[in-house]
Length: 379
Image (tube, rainbow, N blue to C red):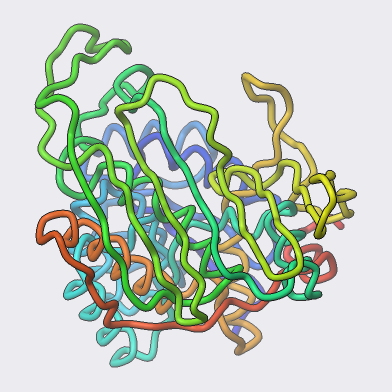
């Protein structure tokens, strides 16, 4: 097999710019074409980044494409991913993998039948900050993790996104949209989840778009926008997860983990970098000295200053795993477990009871400094 996999993208929306801009940082992958049901969108994106625009069927039948990235809207993920695998191409999907466990299991079965590999975002837990936290956990710095808290709360996407409708429909909402970042990182740090319980609600039946170009339009809300969940892990740890788009302001930290020998304080799992703090017994929390992890190095301007953004790291790791014959860190199995957890949280809110998780997975292999550098063209 060639040392570089040809990559095609299906879906030329906002997120495609991130993949197209950051993919050149990584070895083992080369984005060669983009396709979209909107031909003008594909043509525009292709022209912007100097690649080819192809029809979806044309891209999937292209001999120079080994792996296809599915960047369509969430409620199209299953159909498009199935089409990609059926065409004999390896699959990497944006999150969430699917909107139901049934669909995810069908993709898993199809990939196995076709002897193809599949992976799925998010890959932010591969960032320098979260891998530093992983090292602290693996080194026993907090002992056995017994509990924790996670909060992802704001007032939604209608204030900045040009087309926020899908965020407020089934398949959107804070659990399926932002939950993947938090759940993937919890799996990375603690392992698989055994059962969940939740209370769910929505503050308003409609939202008013305040962003351009549709400012003033009213959109319906048809999925829960506030979720209070309890996650019990196979290890015995329990974590509370609060996810809401009905909050104007709060002081909750993004993620805290409590162990028998200390407490760990993590930055937002939606991002690659940030400060990690550790509190040992009887001591105050103190920042952990940042390590030289390449995926923690700031490389992009943000409203709050420079930030680390290495999205596409998961895709590059998948390509390397295919070429090397090893496990994919952002694997279909882990993404499927995440889907199982998320849809079970929503189901628990509807049925008012604990829901046992049907799937399981292993923790992904840690991504240390050496391993991360091996994914980059320059290190």
